[in-house]
Length: 213
Image (cartoon, helix red, strand yellow):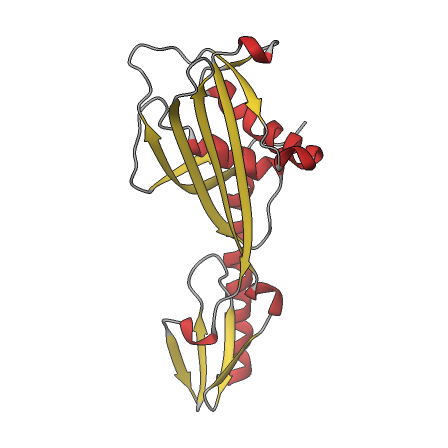
């Protein structure tokens, strides 16, 4: 007899396999929603850049330096070179990043299966996991899977001489962790994928994850 317990075990194994495959993919690449704005002058080469820190960012130099390290690789891949003399740079680069934590509500589940008076289902999105519900009350099998982090980076490129904004790039994604320098580096790279062209509408970009040295 195919009991509910056996069904539970099989579904749990399926969930573990799905999470394992997702984790392996995430180790090699990062997908993000990107948006780019501005009007990079036709025929202008990327040139040299220097980072700018706002007064509030200067209060936490370690965090800002880590963010600059994450963005540096993306700028180099886009054709820029870092200026040895900040006052001689062609472009001034301002950076921003934020991470917010949220958790899905139990009534967000779009799919239910009913077996023997109980409900089983799968939550769509980055936090796939089985949950069990009886008498209309649901709770996650793994509370850790309820955590979800929304991550976003932003970059503004301005002409150093005129202070004119030339290019703005953003990228965001979400997942089960806050991320780190490698992930933010991939987000910055995703944000500059269109450079020097612009695409204001959100669009999906996938880049390879580069391990830190």
